Length: 109
Length: 218
Image 1 (tube, rainbow over the protein chains, first blue to last red):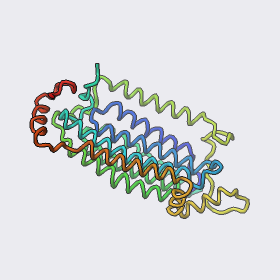
Image 2: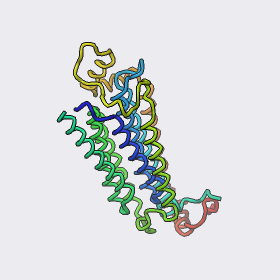
Image 3: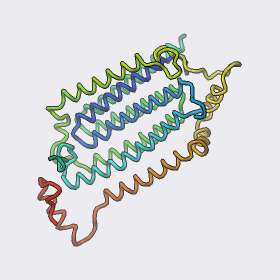
Image 4: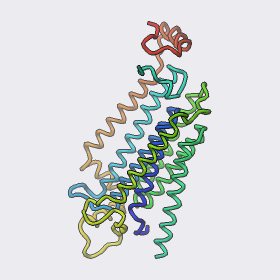
């Protein structure tokens, strides 16, 4: 495609998406909504990785597409995290009959 | 020049849609609406991957995120039916202002870093590196540029080759992590089926919801 979208535009988009995800993690009370916000943050990091891969000069010995490989690994980790997170949420739901993270306060003093 | 303007407008449209979808995911009170907004955000990110000439990654994004993660989240929403009105109070009240402030501060810090950082090559700002390496072959191009062009032209094959050679250990570790995570998720969510323990324990748990963990009946 075209050659001259500035790199910083991708970075601004990723920064805004990351901040949005952070607000979601901080403000939402529903555990599944928190999980969705974490996914938004991981996607923002992926955009950064791929943008730097495409625009930058690769380091010696890193191969032709290091950023894409790392983004694929991040996607793998996100999938694993969603599986474990949903297992934990189901466990907590069965225990407390709620998915509200404010109610999971058994360890607070 | 016309192509550049069209590409920029396309980028701005995709990015604006993606940010709106992210905001919708965070702010919508209905969880199913939030999940649908999240699917839109994933698709916009896939579009950005296409604009970065990583089409294989865009395909993986659509397959894994839209096809698997979003469906998994939908199942999670359906399995945890909100019995205590979690939907009505989606944003926790007293912490709304500090949370928004924290998000704005993080965004400001990131924008400051993007505007002021020096690129790894040490020549100028990120903002000024507006040209990415072209895909058309040149005579005097360095070796990595032609290598990358071949990789972009045939990304799926090159990703496979890289995973089998240079990143073999990372590949194996990712597979191990996925196996452990899925087995762990099944072990976590598995309901105990012992006939002696299950009935009484579940009943007592439902009655003593307010009790802390330590005081569960033994």
